[in-house]
Length: 270
Ligand code: SAM
Image 1: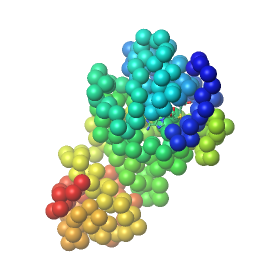
Image 2: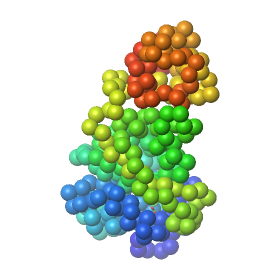
Image 3: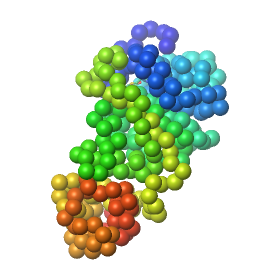
C-alpha cells in the first residue's frame, strides 16, 4: 500500500504477510474470479487485498485500525468497500447483502475463535473461506473424536464445512514474525449439515456444555449446561451413549442424537 510507513500495532495482532509464496497459495485456494465477492477481515497493508482487488469483482475489507482504514478509504479502486470497526461487532448481513461471499483472511490470532463462532452463525453468507490460524487452533479445527485436540470448534465447524489444510506457515513469513507457527485452512460449506441437526442452538448448547468440563464424564459435564445429572443420564442412555464417556470421544452423529434427547435445559439458559 502507498503512503508513509505504518508502525505495526501489537494489540491488533498486526503480523503482516510478506511471503509471496504463501500469498499465492492462499489466493489459489480461494480460486477468485471476476464474478466473486470477497470479504477480508484485517487487510492490514494489503498483502492479500491488493491482488484480490485485481482478481475479484468486489472486495469488502473490515479493519479495526483507524489509521489503516483511513488509508484504505483513499484508495481509488471502484470495487473496494471499506468497513471500519471491530469485525466481531460489525453487523455483517447489513453490508454483505448479495451472498454468496468468499472470505479470505490472515486473522488476528486473538480473535480467531470468536470470528469462527460468528462465521458459524452467518454461514449462509459464504461459499468458501480461506483463513490463517495459529497452528494449534488449526490442529483443533481438523481434529476428530479421540484426539486431545478435538473440541467445541472442531465439532461445530465440521458439522457445516469440509476443512482442508492449505499450507503450513512459518513465523518468518510475517513481519514482525509471531512467536508461533501458523496454518492456512480452507472451509468448503457442505450442502447440508454433516449429520441431521434440527435445532442448531440446542446442538451448540450441548457441545459447549459437554466440552465445558472436558475431563469429566458426560453425565457430570452436562450439568454445566443446566441439566441435572439424572436428566443427562437419561438422555445419554436414550442416545445409546455410556454416561461415563467424555465429550472428546463423541462423534458428530452422537452429539446430534444427544442434543435431540436433551432438548432445552430446565433453566432455559444458552
Ligand atoms: N491481511 C494482512 C496481511 O496478511 O498482511 C494483515 C493481517 S494482520 C495478522 C491482522 C489485521 O487485522 C490487521 O490489519 C489488524 O489491524 C486487523 N484487526 C485486528 N483485530 C481486528 C478486529 N477485531 N476487527 C477487524 N480487524 C482487525
